[in-house]
Image (cartoon, rainbow, N blue to C red; front, side, top):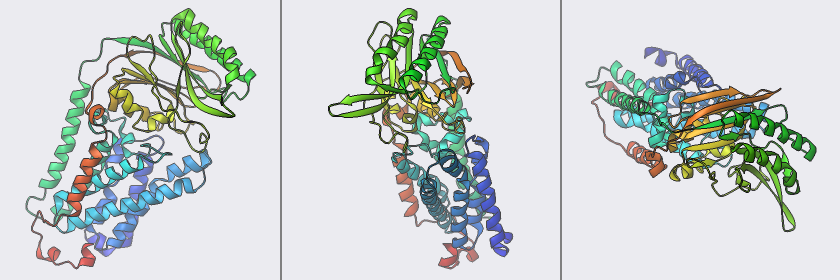
Length: 495
């Protein structure tokens, strides 16, 4: 475009503002999923057309940094984390994105159109996979979670985990930007490479549509979800007993309405080990009288030799059986840094199908959700605690785990939503918790374990992305014969 060459700074400014604005809306606390398909297009169009690699690099980095300001507000204003909690990962992510854009630009401008189109998607998929090992983050920063409202594309998670969805999200704008670049130069077969990329996207949508059309399970279990925001965290015995008594009364009402399982939130209060003799009978008696299984979360302090250990614990009350427990495996720093993580899965006894338990931030990570999928569960129960502003973004992360593992999810969060989804990620019921009263939800949940490719092979897709990235990085093949003016560009102009 002549405009990009004649007014480079203005063109760069427009591209930065457009990309950042689309990211703020498409990847915020309430993601608008269609916007993410075009969010990176302005930055990629600029990178393809500008003769300056420096402008392309700066624009890409700045647009990604500005596009993450929602996360700055969430971490630093809402959660009161230090500025570095946002600045460090956001800066690293922005520089990595700029590197991926430069790789796309370099390959495209030397004629390697096929590898140019897959270079950035492969690069960013690998980056997200590496980021998933960060103990404070897991997969929570993935672009894939913006697409949970686009059910056909969400089904790709059953094959690849979140990384395949991220790949497609970046493949689309890469194909459009490269197509525009090649078409303007009137190159033969200029639509071939972008066309193949768009065909891959179309195939993914068809796969998702077919998967969604599969018959639903005829076996169901009635699950009740229950939460209140009136007490954020009961810090002493008297307050905890009063809160548990209230939960027990409301849980019994749900059980009398047919709930076979009643799920309550995580960390309702501080439970010292000596207090279990007064707290447990309140909920165990409801389980024994009604035949329903009750699950509630507490911070359980247990004496160990000369010290004490604290667990973020789900206590499981099964009719006529001893209390069982699950200990959260992934803690939220810095709030839970002193708690002891668990290492084991927990399955409900006396359930009509295999049913597991995880807790809140566990769902930001591939494990233990993948371990439950491989264990063949039909339903995963997820007591949680969200923070109001993130009730949609973070509260719906668990949906992805159910699609990956082929099972339904019941998510009960104070300061969030009560949400039930099936193994395809369809929301079967959702209620917002209330700060002044108890919110409840009763849903017939279909029981089925759908063995998925991701269940069997786990994180295979990032390794395939590594191979694609290596092929792109070492590509010296031109897919098209460029006009003389383009072929003879100086190296500084090409890169």
